[in-house]
Length: 164
Image 1 (cartoon, rainbow, N blue to C red):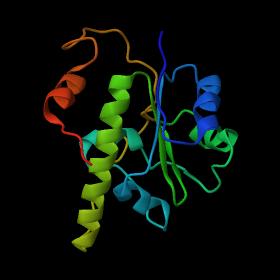
Image 2: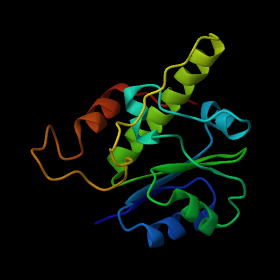
Image 3: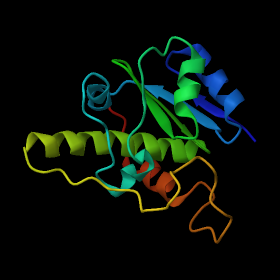
Image 4: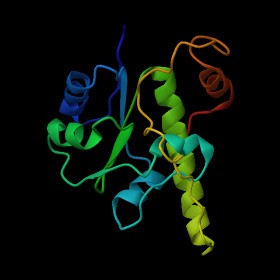
């Protein structure tokens, strides 16, 4: 199986994650401003829309991501970590799932910021009681809906434009 990496820095992070997490096939390090905002203060980035469900109770914050081992330790079996004042590292079981998670992470961060700005009570998605936290483990091979890369990937590849 091929492991895909979208690399924009932190060269030792990817290798350390792949060594520690055989379930991870794709890793992304990025710094979109709407997510970086949650790495600099006391607010926790939590799921507010269905696409952000993989955030569970929030992503852990790594204060010093200088070594890949600090990120791997904080990552454990989670989908990603926030890097203090820097961005995030996100993982998935395929490049297709990684693209979907990265998009959903940005949208969730934008919507959460807008909800907070409205100064209303923000209602977050809560994990179901007794349900395990989301992981990168592939779902049981039930019936496949859509193409092997997933319906989300087909949608994104046809509808999402690149931002400069």
